[in-house]
Image 1 (cartoon, rainbow, N blue to C red):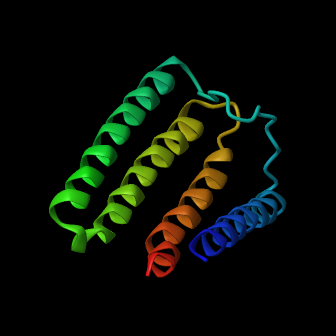
Image 2: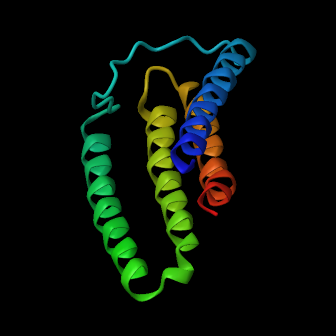
Amino acid sequence: MFWMKFSITVIGVFMLISIVKLVLRKLFKIEKVKREWFSYNHINELHGKIDMWIGVITSISLVSFSWFLLFYNEDLMYLFLIVAGFFTMVDYGVKAFFEWKHSEFPKQAILTMAEMTILVTAILTVFPSILN
């Protein structure tokens, strides 16, 4: 039952992100930028380096934090979602900053910030209810 709820929630969140991006593109006249799936879409070399370090720090922190919570304090497992939400905000915030300041398409930052808001809201509100 957990995996069914989780799958439906993930599909719903991604559908919501797609709809919001479509509406924002029409509203703010943002042109669609063609990007490949699962590729490193960095704005410049500095963005690539910063994104790599954010990924490394996020991975080490989340693995360490989850290990600590699982073995020492299972009652505080909801803190993992807060930490995951924080690192999501950092990652998307850096991406939006580089899109805004160093990109050919600065309006893409609006879409990135909207996507970040939806993801963090889902992480902090929807997923805890699934875990119970």
